[in-house]
Length: 556
Image 1: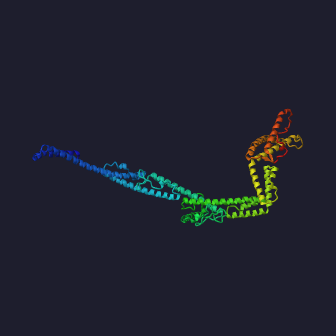
Image 2: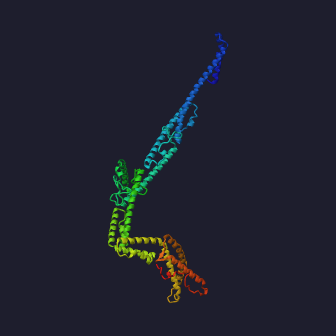
Image 3: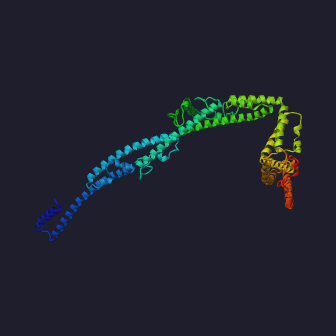
């Protein structure tokens, strides 16, 4: 039946039936208005019947729409959680919504929801496995190595963060992020294992250098500031707090340290197989922060112990070297002793201590020889510094004939003072000595110029004139430069040192000023001399030296 046929049949039926009403009204004796009332009543009943049926169908539609939307809402949440992974279902919610039949649409979206649910839980299981692996790495690398959102499942887009039942984010982007973090974590584990291997190799080498066997599980390695009580360098003393502290944390630490020592012991047992870049001996080892810190602390403590021993050996050697030289021990014997006692083991330390003790006993027996040796060194330093006689006389202990330990100490202090003075004056002393050498050459040129027969006698040197010319040029170039440098640098030194710079007891600054004055005087004389009076052979240089230099007062 169509709407048109329905209306036609209703029209025919109403027309035939309503024609009966006037007769029925007349038989009932009803007033004329009753017919109109009955027709209105029939109209209302027909309208209500149609609307009631329409409302019923509309309600059914609404119920189906509500059911579909509820399922579709769940599908949307799954879709957001899955992201690009939703493509695995082979369809989309938009396509299903095109279905006009609501029961069929409900059936389709329900099937789609089930597919999404299965896909979601499969991906969630994969993500949980990935997250568990990251959490396992975090226990090794430390909880701060990964961000918190990497170690925990995060809600999907649009879901409340505090809702534990909300779908988790399992999009391809989330998988990619976690996989990158997993790769990064594995690389860090490998890196730390290589670092641990290198530190273990160093620790084993340090134990060998120190002549100490590596500790076994149950033993304690030397702490950073102490070692076994028979080591002379560091001894730790337990404090009252350590005696009364709880034993539970210590037992835990001991168990942890025993495990670390076991790992180190296994590595050492296979250390011969270790090659650069390999991880032999560390298979299955997790490079936790605690293990790395323990290895670093052990390495640091052994390094510190080695440095302290080496410093102790160096201090003894410094003493021995001075004693050996004072006693006249030759270089070969000193080198032989050092070669025979290399390293920083306790045995080497004992050998140095015994040798030092023996040398100190010889020192006491030969105090006079030591003091004479010190005086010889003082004389050499005086010569280097060009010390004057008055300055030498100021050091009265030099002539003291009562040989004691105190007198030797005074001499050694003087040696240190003179060495420091030589160090401070070294650049200026080098320039002064070079200056004196130039003055000697100038004096030699003046003497040669005065000897007119040097070029006429038999067996004369044909290259002499050439050498003299080269020497003259050198004197003319270097002497003014050195004078200028010294006249600038010596006053600066005297100002800083607050004392005059003396050479053989005389002020070198005064000497230079005299020399410059002589040079200026000679220059003035040459300017007033007539050109025709010049000799064929030059008789001097462009300058002159102080008479005290020319007469050998300042010879080095």
